Image (tube, rainbow, N blue to C red; front, side, top):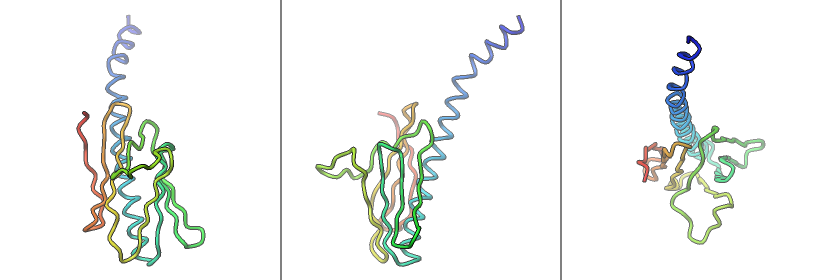
Amino acid sequence: MVVAIIALIVGLSFPSATAGLDNVRMVSAGDSVATFLNGAVNRAQRYQEPVELVIAQSEGLLTLHSNAPGFVRELRMPEGVTIESVLPEEEGADGSQPRRVLFIPGATVPGIAIQLANRRNAHRRIRLDPMTGFPRVESIEAK
């Protein structure tokens, strides 16, 4: 009887626990992408060198490169979180190829947005503001 009660409690609480974990992963991924983009902007301005951001959507990977020897930074999306799209979409671009964005010192910050999704159809968009250069994380309602 005790085992049956424990199994019932675990069975009822498991879906809400996994939903909570998925939500934490999504919030964490959104914050990490915002920090990563902010780091790219700061690196370009502080060191006065171009920084390339490579967004490999199919791999769930963001990579920063610069001319500085040995400077490479990577951010991989956590399990269950994918890069859904990079906005604005390039006309005629192959979605399977990585998207490349260049941050040039003294120039306007590219007005891009990276949209993330998880298994539970939650969406977050991290948008770089071209006026301020700061990333903003937005929750998106499911369609």
